[in-house]
Image (cartoon, rainbow, N blue to C red; front, top):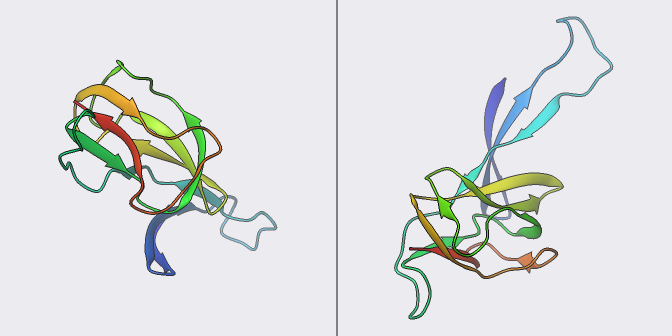
Amino acid sequence: MKNYTITVNGNVYDVTVEETGSTSASTSAPKRVATPVAAPAAKPASAGAGSVKVEAGAAGKVFKIDAKVGDSVKKGDTLLVLEIMKMETPVVAPQDGTVASIDVAVGDQVESGALLATLN
C-alpha cells in the first residue's frame, strides 16, 4: 500500500492506495481505501451542547450516522460516515466521551469545519 496526501481546492486528503494483482501489467485498477478523518481538535462547544466539538475535516455528504445521543464512545470510534469525493470516510471520536448531540442528518451536505456532533 502507498500513502499519498492530496490537496484539492485547498482541502487536504490523506489517501491510501493498494495495488492488486502481480507485478506485470494488470487490467484491474488500484483499490482505493479511505483513511478515517479525526475531528480537527477538541474545542469548547456552545452552551447547551457537549464540551467537545466534532467538525467535518472536508466538505461532503452525510452518508450514515453510527452513533446516537447518549452513546459512550472511545477515541477512534466511528461517529458517522461522510461521502467525500465518492469515498466513504469515517469521522471518528477525537477522545473518549459520551455523545451529547448529533447536529446533522443523513443526506445533509456539509462544508469543511461544519459542526457534526458534540461529546461530553
